[in-house]
Image (cartoon, rainbow, N blue to C red):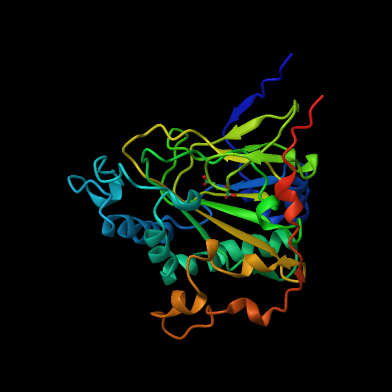
Length: 308
Ligand SMILES: O=C(O)CCC(=O)C(=O)O
């Protein structure tokens, strides 16, 4: 008999536990993820949304009959758009966004830094490799397959992804869903797949539920790098889904070198910083002396499905 996982709708809000670090860490260790309702002020996320939508607009993919904030796509303009590496847009648009200071500095938001300082109880390193998803529903678009971030990040297993919906993301717009408690399953094997990351986890029957959510702007979902997650199907053929993936870890733990370079080497740091004013945000990680650990390529080649 094939096992069909249960689905739970609606995350438990962990905001009250921010005042009780021991209880917060206990929930993080048990569930593998934490959700915070309205952790970041909406106005701050709206500024990031304006930058992301401005990038999409500049590349001519928005339907100009609507207000920009409606994020409505011009179906004719996106027919030939190829989602570059699961970012939802092409390489040129993705590079334009990566050069924006407001995008790069978002992960240093005091509310986010404070959350990870409480979670880790020590100095925090936000990974310089920041990721944006501007999921334009074009014909080549595919939802993100089920995976564990550890396969792509490596370094310490104590990396936590911060998934930021940049606008309201109801389930029908293809938000993220997590497999409750799946961080305890260890590092699982993978097979090739379409969608962000291009690898899908081989999952055998496990009695764990998927948890999904209708996100509002300002909400934050964070999860351990071994937790299984994927995006839901994007059912609005005319609306962009905007989100970011930022990664945080204890600064004294190991990091793999690729986490220190721009996502998919879309540019060099000098190019990203070219139009920024002087700011300590440039190369901020170099002062932290976080130790490096090697990349294990074999994790990407464990393609056998091993189920009884
Ligand atoms: O937003 C998505 O579709 C993928 C995000 C993701 O897999 C991640 O944050 O690790």
